[in-house]
Amino acid sequence: MSPEPFLSIEDLHVEAGGLPRVRGVSLAVKEGRFHGLLGPNGAGKTTVLRVLYRAARAQSGEVRLGGRRMADWRPQEWAAMTGALVQESGLLSGLTVRDVVEIGMARSSLSLRQSGARIDDALALVGLGDRQDQEAATLSGGEQQRAHMAQLLARDPLLYILDEPTNHLDLHYQLVLLDEVKRRGRTVIATFHDLAMAARYCDTVSVMSAGRSVATGSPSDTITQSLLHEVYGVRGSLDGAQLRLDGPVSRGSDDLARRS
Ligand SMILES: Nc1ncnc2c1ncn2[C@@H]1O[C@H](COP(=O)(O)OP(=O)(O)OP(=O)(O)O)[C@@H](O)[C@H]1O
Image (cartoon, rainbow, N blue to C red):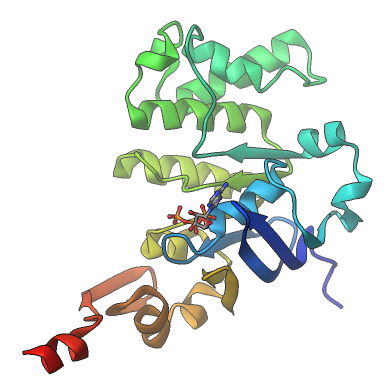
């Protein structure tokens, strides 16, 4: 029998701005697996992640971590087990790069020396070791993303919640950082727009469209030509981690043809 999933979401419904944004999403991620949450703009991916990092409340449904309902974990326990890389990163003004990473270690039970070593390693990994005293707000967008990633890697939570982890990153750091997350062997749920990157890193994916999960499985079984056509509105195919894009599906071309 396969072990119980480490993270499970069952029939999740979330409203935001007075409208349903997530409509009955279910998914399960086994311990140590990397799960991708895919789908076009506005599909509801970030809203699902916001529930996981407690920035949004679900109207109904169940989230479990380690088999235990989210509501049954104390918020401090939940916060200790999970770590999120979010699009709405907090204000950095007045913080150095090292402060940003250190903040993540505030509740750590490690000794000062151990946590200092973790911070050093994480800063070196993201290539900011020699800029740790710089004011974080003066970093470029990609460098800020790397500083936030260093915070997460220094903490190394049991569940990584990553919203567009490759955002702003150059190709080198996309690979360095996601290789490192993968190497850690933690459980990961991450949103991606880059389907080739999703195919490279994800063991399983869920594809969302208009608030619903419309397909789930391995990247190669899920990201099919018809899914690219129907959900993403593009003609193309995925072969391994190679995405071939032939062009957009013309929307409303019938209307245009009829009018001309
Ligand atoms: N607080 C809110 N008020 C109004 N609308 C909201 C709110 N939060 C989310 N939405 C809407 O819900 C929909 C889903 O948003 P969400 O950010 O989850 O999408 P997404 O799949 O992550 O999209 P993207 O790929 O563009 O980041 C969007 O249309 C968004 O505008």
